[in-house]
Image (cartoon, rainbow, N blue to C red; front, side, top):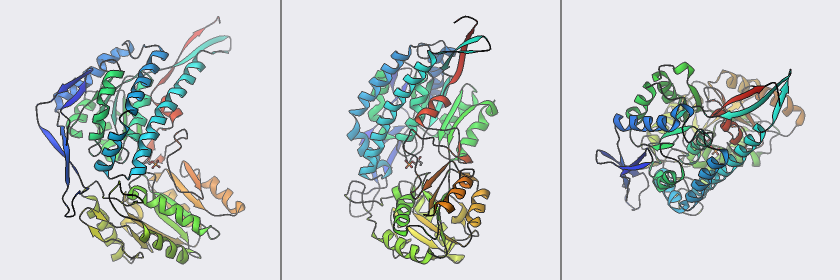
Length: 489
Ligand code: G3H
């Protein structure tokens, strides 16, 4: 059991003697299903939230603090110290990723390693920003020395499905640019931050990183209402993002870095390589049980190939192995959100009631903590699963006869992150790509949707995102361009 009894504020790991919350895993270590108690975390109150806010504001000191004014090489040294210490905690964090959110072993290891790589890439890109700022520009007789500087205190909230990696794609660029941070770990995937607390404490000056535990509405609301946060950095859902933004007295002028929902479609054209399309769509829809914002959440398949596609797709889904995350070859694992199987069942029931069939053998079968992927066909607009983000193991397949049908749906959709396009003929594909790039931000040719590699821009149109999170773009999102102008070089 891991009892997290401290929280990090003002450079100190403060002991918490008040209320705590139990952290359970939906993974059962026994044959008879019973949630496993993993540990406890503090349930801090508004007082500690304000302590964290004040600590971050004091460390920033209106831009005059030690951290925002620190030399580039010294800030890099702090970040390098952190990542070196973080690397020693790999086994503990990976184990907690498996237990807390049910991510399988290879994906948990990848999440850790990818985060380490992200930190090193961020450091390199930050060095490049610094090199660029050493150059002078001259326009209309005025020399300019342009630099990038920090903005203030950042409230940082990450998602449960990538509680380490995606949270750090906010935290790390915010920090290295000289901002100070208040970070509240996600509700699920919270204990895995514990092994890193001392590394945060040892590596950064006091008050630069503050880590608090508890309920979002108790901790984040007063911080937002204070109006003293300069950036809200959140990956999660738009309901939470909208509510938090609205609480800030100048919410419309708050800087937002948001990664939100998506309903990424795949479009399978008549000439697609079906084996490839099926394999990519399996990975796209069901990796980590479909709990990825980049997951394929609706498959449009041309009516001329849909029967064959469905046959191969359903067969492959039935072969996927279900089990505990550390077992070899397992791709389907228990769902960490206890309410998720019920929600998925509702989507299935609604679609079936309106005429869809479950076309795979075990589709919709349940265990105590899991619902097997249901492949639904034919799905149409009247069904909830057509539009609602399922974020779980259910796959809607929509037949189409004219390419205008999926294109119109995408244009109407509230989301606009990515699309996967499967086909061979270049003369068909290229005009389609020109249209698709204006509907989403990434077109994946003959491959499933995904975020990485992290150097590429990760963003979305409409309700899917606000700002961009690549290594390069994130450094810009968390900073501002300033310059010194002079008539002499
Ligand atoms: O949940 C959304 C993540 O950004 C997905 O990332 O495509 O690397 O799995 P991924």
